[in-house]
Amino acid sequence: MRASAEPARQLAGIANARVGPEGRLVDLELRDGTITAVRDAGAQPAGGAVLDVAGRVVLPGLVDAHVHLDKAHILDRLPPDVDGLPAAIRATSAIKETFTAEDVIARSERVLESLVRRGVTTVRAHAEVEPGAGLVSVETHLALRERWADRVDLEIVAFAQEGVLRDRRTAELMDEAMRLGCDVVGVCPYADVDGTAAIDDGFARAEQWDVPLDLHLDFSDDPAVHLVDDVVRATVARGFEGRVAVGHMTSLGAMAPQDAQRRIEALAEARVGVIALPATDLFLSGRGVDRAWPRGLTRVLELIDAGVDVALATNNHGNAFTPVAAHDPLRMAWLTVLMTHAPAGRWADLAGAVTTMARRVLGRAPGDITTGATADLVVLEAGVPSDAVLVAPATTGVIRRGRWRATAPVAAPPALA
Ligand SMILES: [Zn+2]
Image (tube, rainbow, N blue to C red):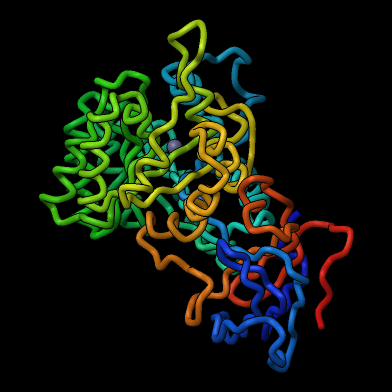
């Protein structure tokens, strides 16, 4: 199953790659896992192994900026009729004692394997921390981060899914998770007893450990249910600009345009990144009406237009929060076209939300295909750049730090010259 079983070959170059919104045809020179030159195609290739991708679209390595590996693929343990967000949290909580280390690793690797084969090279995963389950999830994520390091940068969020204030042992476990080596503090104000206090607690812990903060925030169809103003205020007050990401934000989609716009501008000013989770947001939102169901997504296009960095991420797979599974950020961009009424010309923005802009949401270098960038790339079965989002085509192969690995059987795979 594991991709590591396949040989990965170090490349000196890639010929005939179609890159950027205009689909410029280029040759890339690679050295020591870095892009060392980008030239118009047709120049004499560098010595060594050069992969001719024959005009296929090449994107920066994909990003899954928000995923729950530890509760993926558990439908066989849940009642078949779990209905809505509170019920999903309750039903999942009730089976957490079945999450052994071996079990979490097996289900997590099923998702990681698919993501990596799709072309994902950066993942932020939320590892659950709460007294019932202890640190099983954190410990397994730490092991996975090591085991998968040659294929993917795995960031671990220590995540208090059921709130950090309900049980004082949770705060102790959160600190222990950070001491063990988690990369990000994660809180869920809407699941806590006091959302504002949960936000304060999250900022204090992120400050204490000097790490970014990631919040599940404002997941409601009700425009009055939101804490975004508190998050923006705290971000500025604590000097956390550029280090805060907020996931869901569906209340922002429900607000009147002028109320939303004010907050969008504040998010841009405070450099808070937004992570939309289209599959879960579509599945769990719009349940209070009996016709013309709302889509339940945040204002993706307006946020991008205002200069907010936005990521589109997969979130959940095969559980009560999202019973379907699409281990595929490009499929989230494809879905977002439909959910936001995005004109076809917005495809490049949505591609950015699963590549370069998504990496900025995580506080990383964007990884544009330019000289000096890490050679983390994905080759798609497409010759037209917009097809990356509008078709979400199959992946031909992945280049991770200059090493090529074919990932999908294709009719005419490109040959190594
Ligand atoms: Zn989530």
